[in-house]
Figure 1 (tube, rainbow over the protein chains, first blue to last red):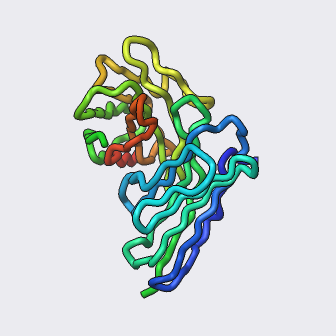
Figure 2 (tube, rainbow over the protein chains, first blue to last red; figure 1 turned 60 degrees about the vertical axis):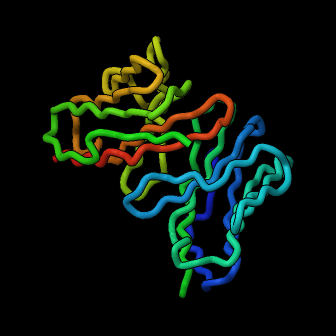
Length: 110
Length: 114
């Protein structure tokens, strides 16, 4: 079992819709959870981080964490074509270094 | 957030040679990390660069192949030694802040080994 799992996609949503990206992790001791966006040919860009159970909102983005079920999700409201990218879920198990999922490719159709 | 720069941005190298990649952060940071992203893959941690002591390597990565230096709190280098085509990847450095526990990535170094 991979430590951090994501559906590779592509996830295709129409412009203006809500995109829902999911991630599960295996280490119950994981403490911090991150979502990065990576455009083709670019380095990962931090979108959000979350430490506590529940929701965290930042603009069009909402991160959701459920430690009991070991999943973390990212919702993107009012999706735009510019949101088309690969979204990487990353987990810090306490060592400060991150373990990444394989990423979900999101396509927002105009 | 930190501003991180890397040099070179890309290089094409011959097998058997070595390449040193530099990573500079615009402020002092506690943690620096080196990752590899192979074509079409996600990021894999190579090592944690420790200031004043030897780097901590992940399983599958060894110091002889990927020597790392961290002479101060703003700078680190990664050397890819005795390269083979399998080393063709993007190499990324990142920094973390103790109080924020977030990591920001440099722009990456695209390496092609022929």
